[in-house]
Length: 73
Image (cartoon, rainbow, N blue to C red):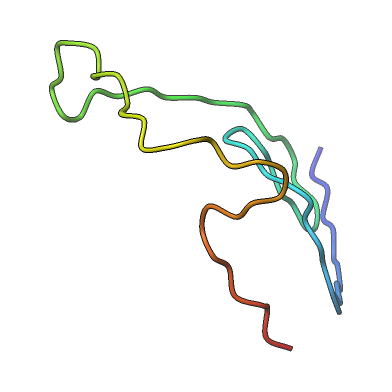
């Protein structure tokens, strides 16, 4: 069975609260979305990564680790 869908989508503003590695953000229709995940060792590493160094106390509350600029309107 063939199904044809015609759409007209107008987006004036969209806000995404959060995304993760396996999130799917879709606008419109899709016949089927299959989850896939691939893990490659492209660097040829053979040992575990070293433990991270501690450079000071962890940030508290809403401290920003990376400064972000305000979105332009």
